[in-house]
Image (cartoon, rainbow, N blue to C red; front, side):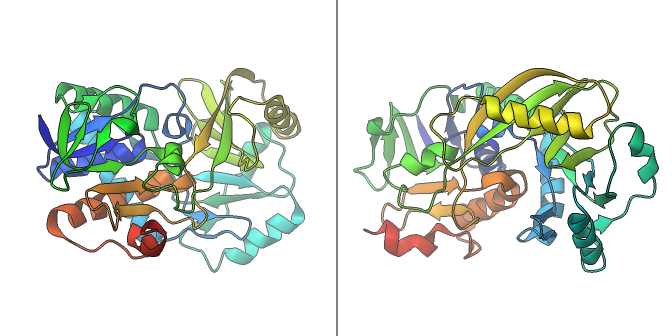
Length: 352
């Protein structure tokens, strides 16, 4: 059978790219191994419009935020599930300096920052020493539901090959057609997350592997109305469970959950949280980050029927919907991809 596109990977990037291509009337085959712990499956799903200790707007957030809200809403309606809701972040300032930094940014970032009017209400749940700032709007994406339900949809359309991708089986001699394991396609696109740094066609891109860890804890008495942050972040998960994370470990020996991270979380919770809790799970995964903090989107400058959709890093929930649409429009209508995201910016490197 011949498809228009083979997509390797069904994380948040592969999900949105396959959805957009199907919306555009193209046929796709998604190849993805069923793994319990991948970056998308264990990510928090938070879309936060500001970032860093300087509390500055994330890149293109004025465009990405409304686009993501529409995309998750439309995809959810198609699948019969609710994929996104607004849940703002309450940022508990850990030091007087951070409190002052937030206050200094308030008049500059009034679109996204404010001081909550009911700060006293949270003192029964947390130790509030230097006040609270609110980041509004923030959104929480139900990534686990999205990936599972979209996966089932792909299976029903005979558009999923649930296996480990082996690049040695990819045959690209014919520029008009590629072949993988008996399946033909006009092009193949790698949306394979952290595995992309080992891809022989794209390994020269400035990937920056890092390890993230998260803990799932039961905190039944904590209101699920907000995301709470102070050093660590508490995100509503499911039932009475909370996602707690995360780390950015650049120098790591393995992808196993570490005792050090668990101890750090428990130490912070003891200092900050006033409620009883119970840790029920702890996991780790490798993230597909990159040194530029800009996505890799587009077709290889030499191998023109081989593409990449990767490098989203921790902003994958906001970047993937928008750039999946841009990539689809480029493939179907020869539209331009944002030059800061277009993989052609690495033409010299990839042409070696």
